[in-house]
Image (cartoon, rainbow, N blue to C red):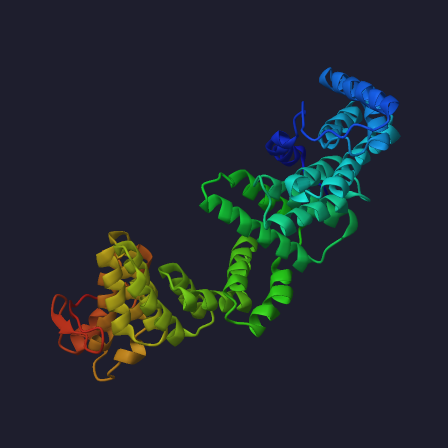
Length: 438
């Protein structure tokens, strides 16, 4: 489906100032040597100029055509003004065949001008603009516009004014939609090239936000970038060249946009980016991906790296919280507790979660802490868990922990009373006040 009117209007609005003005006078007039022909040439030159100034372009094209045919090297003004005349005639004409003929004549005027004056760099961008304006909706001719934009880039290295970039990619989009003229990889290549040029223009102080937004909308409308494309088309290239930072960044950006962050190729791209220029975010996200894959030791290494790159207490708290989970999954419960408490210290919003997390660690430590000689002592860890849940305000956790307290009978049998204190031992390492579940 082709772009909506909002995009088309934005592009044309940005380009309207490209239209050339009238040329009133030029040096180097080459009047015919024959007096009769010279007189006629002067007459027709005055006539077409008068008609043109009055915007009677359909009348202007007659004498102009005679001059182009019989005195083609009269003056370059014929070709500069000729564009205006034939463009105006195309806008005034009502017959579709005539309109198409006049539009074609605009581009022919540029070709004739080049044959005589060999100054293509001066006007190639304008020629590309007119080809886009006239042919963007024409299945058979839109490729003329794309090739002229590419010729402009070949000559100048870029498109100027910068707003032409959006028109060029719109022509690419239409050629793709009409004719499947490019492979998805070729489209991406053109998109990335234009975006690079827009970045350069932006760095030079130009406002390219509208052009960038248009490109993004057009690329999305092509519906060629999805998780399958990233995995099957871009993935093998990064696998073959894992240090290709530009490709890695493309994969990263597209994967985020298309929500393909669970793929192996996303992780590979992230590794390439993080190895080249690590940031807090890249290292943390890599660590989280390893966590998802149950590669806890690798995750821990990345989180430690992220911690060195953290700039705020909030970021540091996030990493300590991540490390708490790493330690827990590796069975390092004491270290898990320390990391959780450090996260809470750095960010008080983590305090409830931290104590609930610690309660869960303790609840899962029955086998770690079971001595087998005293049921009261073995069950005392659940009192410690209860206290942690209480600090968290976790009523469900508190109820679950209390159900595992020793019973009154168990306290009596071992000579304890409610209110006595006892050391839990093991990694929990707390002294708790005895209570019963009943």
